[in-house]
Amino acid sequence: MYAFYREIHPPTGVEHCVYCHFFSPDQQNLVVAKGSELTVYSMITVDSNKPTDKDSKPKNKLEEAATFHIFGKVMSMQSAQVTGSGRDALLLSFMNAKVSIVEYDPNMHDLKTLSMHYFEEDETKEGVYRNIFHPVVKVDPDHRCAIMLTYGSKLVVLPFRRDGLVEDLDKSMSASTRRGALMPSYVIRLNEMDDPICNVLDIQFLHGYYEPTLLILYEPLRTWAGRVAVRQDTCSIVALSLNMAQKVHPIIWSQSSLPYDCMQVQAVPKPIGGVLILAVNSLLYLNQSIPPYGVSLNSLTDWSTAFPLKTQEGVKLSMDCTQATFISYDRLALSLKDGEIYVLTLLVDGMRSVRGFHLDKAAASVLTTCICPMGDGFLFLGSRLGNSLLLKYTEKVSETSPTDASKTEEPKPVREISYF
Image 1: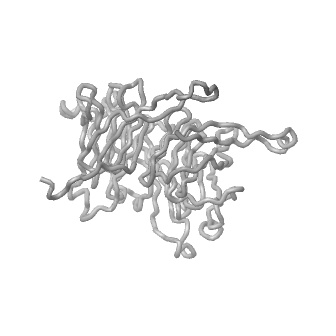
Image 2: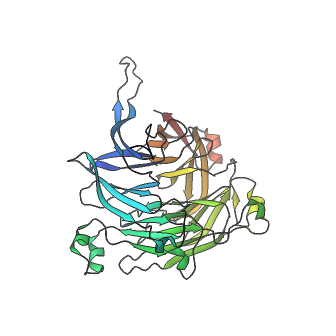
Image 3: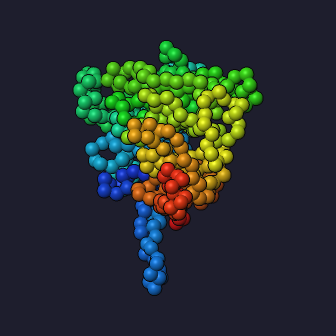
């Protein structure tokens, strides 16, 4: 029975995490993916064991609520509201180009499959024998659709059922398709567009657009550190506006000549908007309506890029292998490759334009593989090299004397992080 494969011990390394309404609309849970296992946690409050200690405060901890075994390794995980139950469904991608949408069923106390999609036909592969690209799933912030990037240059669009979208789509769909939680999916071939897109580095949906807008970070002509003297600033971005009714996707925004070491995209929430590009040696803020702004994090940018960068005073960082998430509309938590945690604050003016960054070291923790905020003041750090952590963060203003305060425009925010 176990001649081909047998699991001796369940996986323990945390790869992905989301915080969503898994069990009910009134309760949020932490869902963690560890290889072929999904574990759901609830955050509970524990009173102090020392009743005589007046200064003690209630502690919070994660309590395991359910565990589900899956026949396959989860490569990417996102949550979205695709039904009218109020619960969030999980979008799970698997190698090579498979995605499943599952939801918790309270009657069976198990996962219920809402939809399964398979995109491994020969026509989609285009001769690829061994796929080296992991399928990546992203969900629109307004829960209108989901995107899966597979085979490096194929975008699978999964439209969610919405009343306005249903009226615009073809009325000749079968009855079973109309009753489903999703509308018919389709594939966008990036390498067959008018301006071909290849070597995709990251994708992310943007906030504040009328239609789902996907930003793609890619590198048309590759380079590396040894050829920067000959070819530099090779990265570019494009923003596709997805009209799912007509299945058209015009480019509404593009920018080229970005530093060659750009690696990650973070969509800035409203009311600021725009996108934050994380590069190994720099940070960039891009917006469709204002000029770009960027800062240098170390001296390597002096010879590796011609992009106009300002010097970020007081820090010398390298951002490779960084995990990042927004904890508010203008603050970003960064977990670096050496375990240090920084809080990045976007300094905006009266016109909601980013005019500067402030980086503040908050703590040090484990080497993280995933990160997600949990409610007000909590942050989860998942790791496959050590124990995952639930952190509580608070904000305090640094104390300055009246003389020192007159020399500065505003006090710098300081983060204080406690471990649970």
